[in-house]
Amino acid sequence: MPQAKTKPDARYSLIVFDWDGTLLDSASGIAASIQEASREMGLEVPSRERASHVIGLGLMDALRHAVPDLPEKSYAEFAERYRKHFLAREEGMDLFPGVPELLADLENAGYSLAVATGKSRKGLDRALKASGLGKHFSATRCADETRSKPDPAMLLELMGELARKPDELLMIGDTSHDLDMAANAAVDAVAVTYGAHPEDQLRARSPKGVVGTVEELGAWLAKHG
Image (cartoon, rainbow, N blue to C red):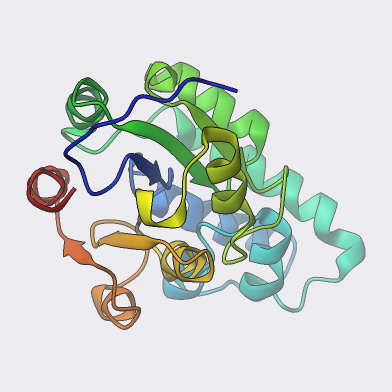
């Protein structure tokens, strides 16, 4: 088991981040890729709002919500078309300003960091390598390894791996799926409003904090973390 760092004076010792829309500015690219794959297959093209709503879910769960008319037998074809469009955009996706510095500061302060994402393992590994952020995380969980958000499995497994209790963990994400997962795992959460879901949907989940930028997130953690 990895030896996790601890911060003696902190309320939380493990901070778990969502990836898309929280660390990486990818929400618009994901939504557009869903729309283009739908168009290619002759399906009703979901609105930007509907396509964005499924960000953070595992791919199969996302398809059930975003393109409900898609026959299950066509899921694999749709997934392949979606990946083609997403990969074509991926190199142009950037980390939100301040993310590398925030993660470095948190790690240096003694927090353990982890990721819980709707991405596949292959997709997350590629993103961690491309971004150079992999070195900061003690553990990660992906939707194709366990049950998808909002099921608490990702967080429960991370707590087990890193020997943490629910009151030691803070989840940070940009979607209601992230916040619902945290609630289902009985852990606290902070919502960021610069990602996929609108602020009113996030506030409706009553997270411990709501922030609008990475800089604000760093300030919140310095005060409450």
